[in-house]
Length: 106
Image 1 (cartoon, rainbow, N blue to C red):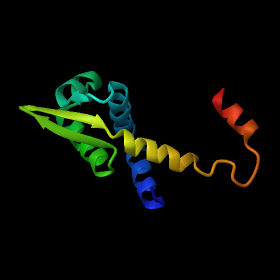
Image 2: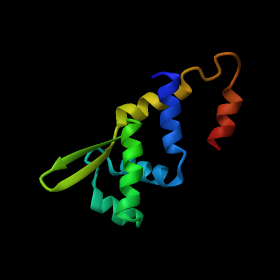
Image 3: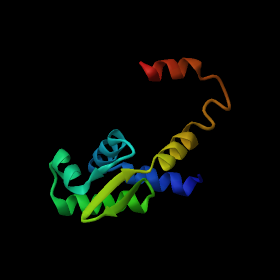
Image 4: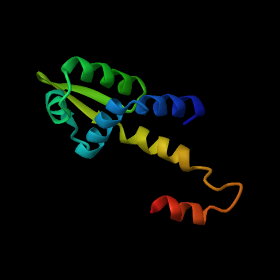
């Protein structure tokens, strides 16, 4: 993970619709969701979903796989783990943070 990739992924998650899509896919687990099921759960137009999925795919946060006539969307858990690790990697490297972490958890 590098700064540019982390910034790109954070930018893609900065849109409320894309964040909803991503969180829904993360919740769905490794099996993912068919595009139609994702659209139904989020109650958004197909064109809107397609646009936002493309941004998440381009950022490396989501993958798509065609199985027969069904297009399955999945969260890329490796990318998610890398981003979280990158964000937390140097936590409190220059000072104390125990109190900060306790406050953030509340």
